[in-house]
Image: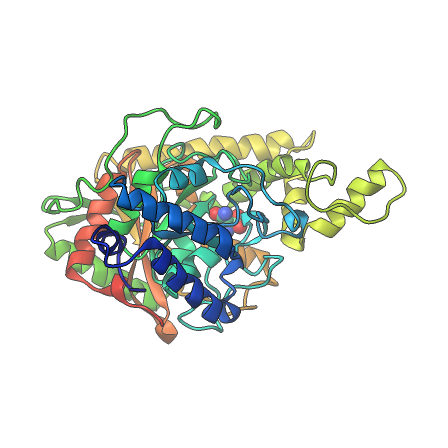
Length: 482
Ligand code: GLN
């Protein structure tokens, strides 16, 4: 049951082979047994989960089931969920019980999915290793001395360790795809604007996008069918006709043109990752695809541009955490300014403070043009590279990360090294393009390797097709560390 796909679980529920209450109880028991080792969940709330499961069982009995009705889904602790502690991995929100549901949570509730718990994450989604969480590091289930990736590390760990059938994540510079890659699961960041950001605690609003993490492309399609949709409460939410993201899964790949950016297949990628990617490309050629070299000349600028813009937006977004309305407040202080200072000094961790300082600096008078405006101009050039590349190919592929999972503590003292984990992923956020990661092999120390698949705007169905066809002829996505 723990290895079953969403479709299989849905069928078992429909055929009454199992009830949602039983299914939910099984996963809750597994979390109870294993979470102490992995630390994938910050909050588990049996009472709410089981109440949702009972409601789902009624929906199923009444013949009102959607494919995800009654299925337990792990929710990243960045999504506000009514009645749930919602911490964003921070001491600042360690006492915040959300009075309302995020747009994404509402959509899962509407179809009767069960919230199985809130997953651990880097503090305010800032990180690539899940080591910045106030709630402690998450372990990689493939090797507990390795990081699970970040910032959606709890989500990736939960799916890989079979503590949940699927999970939500958010991706500002790679936080769905990078942990998916390091934990050997599949994850997709949709085109910017498809998934509502309402109630999704903001890090860098022009880059943040929610998306699903699951065992296979087919599962991702079912998750996206629930998660995507217009939300008037998010000013950048897109109003488009509803799509069935599973509609193209079975299409043959003959004639597909896969672009391989020469800048991605250069120095920087480790040997074990390179060979797993090469083998995956070989499979694609067997499936009838052809590969063409493309160029993204500004690709090397993605990291510096991202690390100007993301902190700039974060410094503005995080100014709301001041101890006045909600969240942590310092115990003793002399006046209002002292209260702000002490609250923020106590409530934020080191990485969050670093981002606020960098962001405030690049937005300040005298540096704004040199850094912030310059980065915005480069962001446009990076996007133009992709427009050019997509004239020669349908899909772009490369590695999701330059190496397999690194060890806990290996990069936490060196922010620059940590930031370089996002070298292949951050361009998708800067451009708003959809991108995903699927497992394609095991590298050094038997740690998973992810293939990065990037599509043009709104080509999620095509990307899922490309991923699904590979998963029909290989079994990397079925491998589990537990
Ligand atoms: N690792 C990147 C950062 O720390 C991206 C994080 C994310 O996508 N949320 O900013």
